[in-house]
Figure 1 (cartoon, rainbow, N blue to C red):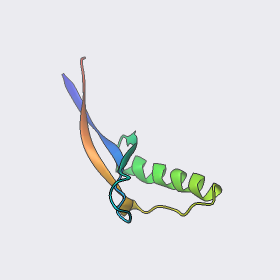
Figure 2 (figure 1 turned 30 degrees about the horizontal axis):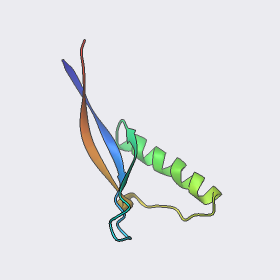
Figure 3 (figure 1 turned 180 degrees about the vertical axis):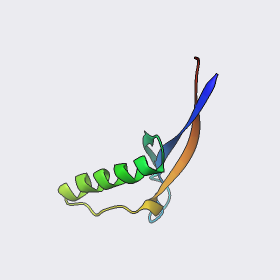
Figure 4 (figure 1 turned 180 degrees about the horizontal axis):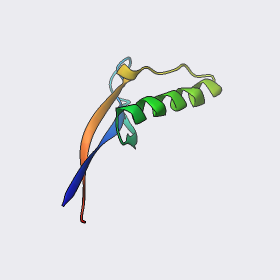
Length: 68
């Protein structure tokens, strides 16, 4: 069985009270996270919201097992 590691992107509510933690998406690697964050912030700015920073997210590794 083959395994590949992906990352769950979790908003960690660092600047709040910690009650608003949530899973945002799953990315393939840290470069994909940076690309997602850039796109995510463009959407937020389009709605009049402030950009979010990397430290506001946790990357949680998870293995996906695939049968050959």
